[in-house]
Every structure is written in structure tokens, then in C-alpha cells.
Image 1: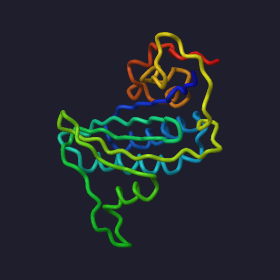
Image 2: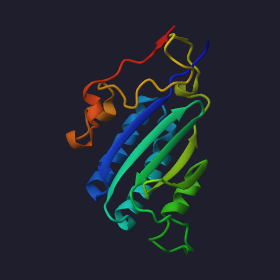
Image 3: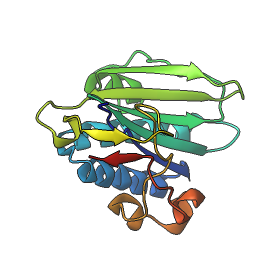
Image 4: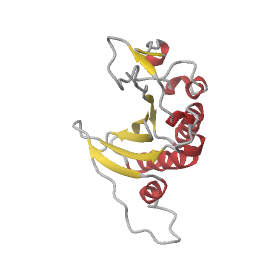
Length: 188
């Protein structure tokens, strides 16, 4: 059976200006690690805009989670917060320096959207198409063990040796990173 292990990265943070810059660097390092250098600029710009929106508008707190999922030919990046108010693209003139966040996200991404969460918060997400020449876009052959299902995510968090987390401040590292789970899909 042919299967490809999905790649996933999660970072929890308070959307404060100094943390936004750190997460931008983590996103860039993670994409570099996945050999997706062509997606670094649009992904970093879009995630910065979404985190800035959380910083400027989210209530009751600025706590949020950034998730990156790489599956097949698509990278999906989402920002989850606790504010139930849904964002909208407002009317922006050519010289405005505010209110362009979602318009920029729409301009650099393949698609984007917003969904409400059952707990009262929301998730704003965008997707980027993985260039076909990218090594990360090339399907990998793998043997699937009896306990694994095709396309199963082996672990919700990356291994400790991934450079994006190796340089991250300790308070940005997920607790689950301290004990990585061995993947259930074995390379062939």
C-alpha cells in the first residue's frame, strides 16, 4: 500500500508583538525544514497578518494557536483564538495602512476562510499550493503496519530534532514535544 505521512506543526502563544516575530521565524524555519522554501514568504506574511489581527482585535484574551498541516500538494495554516467575532474584509483604499490583513491573506494564498468553533472561538485559515518540484510534494513509498491507517498522522507534534522547535523559546514549545511519539508508518 502506498501512503504519505502528513506533516504537522503546532505553536501556542499569546499574540503579542514580540511573539508574532518569533512565530514568523518558526514558520519560516519549519517550511525550510520541510524543503518548502518557495512558500516561506507568503506563509510568513499571511500568518503575521492573522496574528496581528488576534493582537489587535481578539477578546477576551490574546491566546491563540497556529497550526501548519502539509498534506499532498497543499499547505494549510490556521490561527485559532477565543474571540467569537468573525473577521471580514473591509473597504481599504490604496493609501490605508490598516485593515489590509485579510486582503493580503487573500492575495497571497490559494484559498482562505473562517469557521466558528463550538467553544465560542474561531479559526481563520489559508492554504498554499505546494510547488510540484518540491521534495515535500513528492509522494513517499511506505509500508503501513497493521496498526496504522493510510494517511494517518503519526504524531500531533514534530520530533525534538526539528530546527523550528530547537530554537524556539521554552514557553513556545508544546509540552508533548518532550516525549516524541514514534511514527506508526515505517519507511520502505
